Image (cartoon, rainbow, N blue to C red; front, side, top):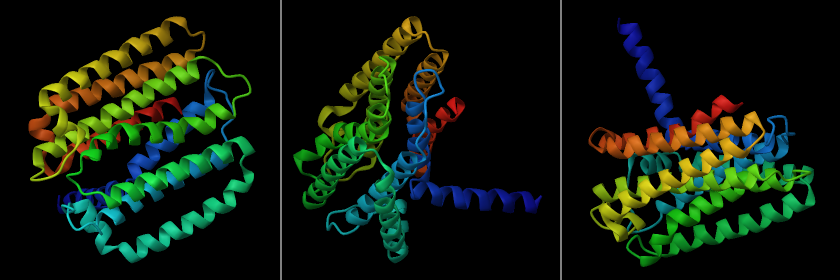
Length: 284
């Protein structure tokens, strides 16, 4: 059975590195953008340009964030960041190459999507610069989770909504639910990180475990109520499926919070938490 053990090792080896590169996050963002473009009936036109740009943008932002983290004097190294240190020259070349591809692709974007993307890129750039300049103990770190959730949701859903000829009410509602889900995910990660941090500051540390647990429960409740409203009032089966998926994903986040004893080791919660967004593959 050595061949089986070797196969499992090789698969885990590459899956781990794909996770360190946030390729699971990229995949989740791309799939969610496709879903947003297909609303409300599941047959909406999907732009290959905006889909590619969403994937490229998410990859560049996550890699750049890690590379900047590694240059901070008070940064606490993790296996993910050590991987980026080891491969920094190659990653910089990949990011530069993808940035050039993105610059070419923008010529195929509608003007309103281009303006929206340029504005959001400027905001994200300022965010990366500001987080690089402040220390890990700065009180402004409490804004990280809500700001990232807003930028992530806007970047994925914004282009899809802007290109809809007739905006169905389900699109902004489901956008809001996915935004709450993104915040639930980031706050959960922040809480897990607070259990291991020797020094630093975050929203989870500022609130404390009891408040974080209460907020996560409220987020689950809001998502469930919002999804039920979509299921009851929509006339589109695809929107029903999207609402069911967001509830399942939120429930999985809730389960992950309750499984802290087993999920904390080796940052298992990150692989599981990011992987939850791949449940959206059911909607393709």
